[in-house]
Image (tube, one colour):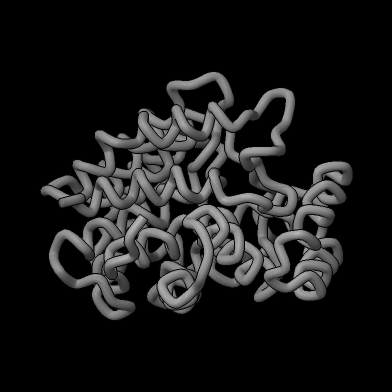
Length: 277
């Protein structure tokens, strides 16, 4: 029987195996410096941190351990955002509280030490982040461990950071709202048809069509993110049409990374709820 940590690793593997995923690495599409194999290795490397998350490690410590392990491959950052979502979900599942209320409580209970672990994780890989919005009064995450003293002085918990970041970041918003999109899409995975990788691809497409991707907004601007959402909505869950869109996005350098992060979370919830693979 798989444990929550096992299911989290499987969710990471299924997320990258889902094909097509417009703009993201999948079995048929990759970038010169970021390949399918890097995601497989990152999924394995994150295992120790995920197992720590289901025992007694704090959210921040488990997340940093996940990221450090994930980084031990040649592609750099493969699954930073996925792991940010999976760690509290694993904690909630291990406590038999995998529900929007249960995982939100796990997130609310995070501490200043957890925030410090989150910032230190940025030292292990290069994460695509833009300049902080003018109204976001938190230390720049690109400072990594150098921001820890300020975090402690200000008494900022990881929940505080996510709550402040939620208006600008899809993963932070999912954290503070109790993972509503992840739980909703998990239902579709459970009720859907086709292979596991087809269901993973459709989950990605549903999420991409639902809201503008915040990583696309960082890299290309809000208008481009809205355009990507609209183009995904026009495709729907037609995998043949999605394959054409995937080729277009790769050519345009569009990488909806936040959508991939939420997809991994949805796949984990589906696995924990009995999805057989």
